Image (cartoon, rainbow, N blue to C red; front, side):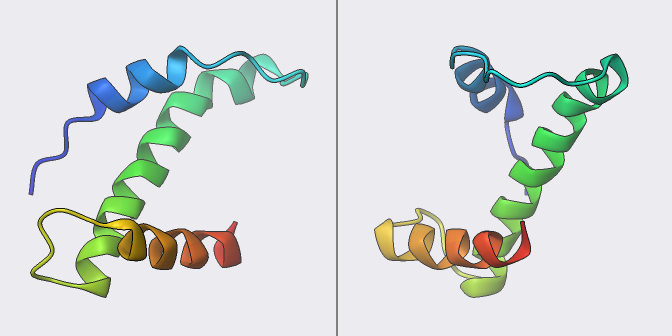
Length: 71
């Protein structure tokens, strides 16, 4: 399974910055953290339904419910 992260990360980069102060170390780690969460989300879809090719609203709701519990 290949996941193209570039379009996702580019879209996230367009969002306005949050009004929070992070250390330089944390800011340097944010791309890796976002990438890891994105890959984890993609893998969650496969756990929920191994045959899934095009997630629909119900799939997103189940996957985000799992992430809400974990994060």
